[in-house]
Length: 171
Image (cartoon, rainbow, N blue to C red; front, side, top):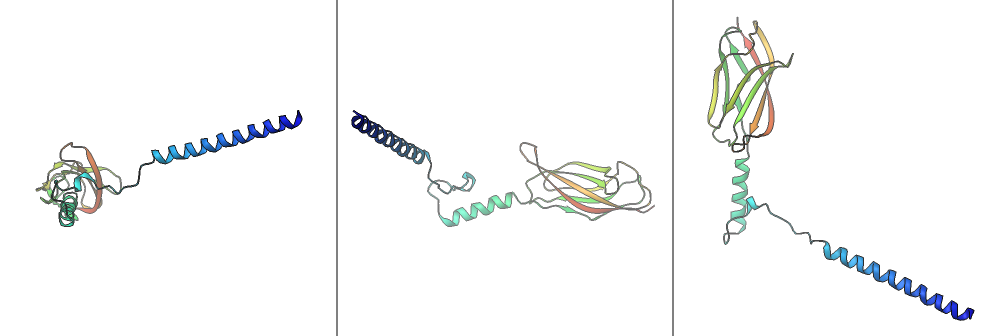
C-alpha cells in the first residue's frame, strides 16, 4: 500500500511540475506575442507625399521644418533715452524669417521691476521708439529683455529666451 501511495505521489508531483512548466511556457509565449517589434518611426511631418519618397525629398522636407522652427531676434544692447520720461530708442526686431510672434518685457536687473512691455510683435515687425513704464533718473541701468515666444495659430506660449541690455538715461 505504501509503495502504491508513493507512486501516486510521484505521479502527482510530475503532473504539477508539468503543469507549472506548461504555464511558464504559455506565459512567455503570451508575453512575446504581445510585444510589438521595434520599428524606427519617422514623424508624419517628415513624410513626403505618396510616390515621392526618396532620400533627397526627405532631407529637403526636414530642412524646411527645421527652418520653420528656427528663431532669431534682433535687439539693440543699448536703449537710449534723453531723459527718464521721454521716448527713447530701443530697437526690437522680429525678422520676417521667423514664424513666431513674440512679446518682450524689459526689467531692471537690480530690482526685477518691469519697465517696458511690448505687446505682440509679429514676424517682420519692429519696435523702435518707446516710453518707459517707470521714469528713471539719469544713469545706466543693467536690464534684461525676456522674450516670450508664441504659437502663431493657438497664441499659446511656446518658449522664453532672454537677452541682457543697458538702459541709458542721458539727463
